[in-house]
Length: 404
Image (cartoon, rainbow, N blue to C red; front, side, top):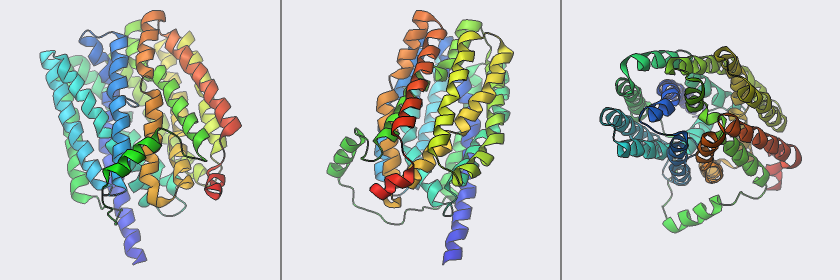
């Protein structure tokens, strides 16, 4: 029985790695082209920021979807939400392609909302990855799926930027749709469910769970607040970099793609060694180190204008991401019981989303008021605040579990 379960774990990880590769391919291109795409339709940076606040990484619909998805995934299972999220992604790309052809902003908004709703799978993906890993190897499992996400980003953004500069946005979105469709088929056909028990859905329980999401859990409050403050700071500044570089220095989409490719290559090279390090070391110090790297990175963005320097800065950004993403996932995995893991990921994403969702809009307003330096300065100040919270209040997850 044990060997069979281990084989199923291994097969699931392979499917999750392949899924990450497919999703990483289209996401790495989308992250490069969306802000220039919106600007090409006549949007201001304030509008670009508002769209990100609606359905971007920490957007309003992104946040609500993760809360619902995390709670339901602990009752229904992980796989249904991954399938549904991928279907939303397919429809969203179709809407953006039509928006580019017809110049209809309502279609852009519809695509952005669907991308936000597709985030209902994030807690399920985190949980199924943890449940498909062997004990004591969660950091490595999160890292290998992250590397699979990053590897296509070594080539895809540069190639996608080159294609976009030549055939336009209408031509690139159908290609991204094809990769999302392949991901949908892969999950639907090959992924094994890891959550074997089904519980009745009582919407009154969800209302109480939603209310719990508004307040960080006891013992994890400082951790939740630090993660939320980090999301707000980076959404305010660095996450708007593509659009700001186009508006300020007239960078081309191909140049943005080269920057993204350098970042993905650097991140992919770093991630597995960092993941192994995470498995055997304390997490608090790594988070402090990761956030500290944001200080020189923001200073580069504030003071420099040269394309080559921004390329070099992507290596530093990659190190920041590689030391943050798996550590946050591993911290929460170690700090909560397996039975409530998806809900815990949903609660974390809900809380940080509620704090961070207006940040991109504020960042766009700051840009239109004070140029590229204003939002990046806000990002710099926010990183310093997060460092202080981590140093003064966050404890190792083992201490949290013992006190729970």
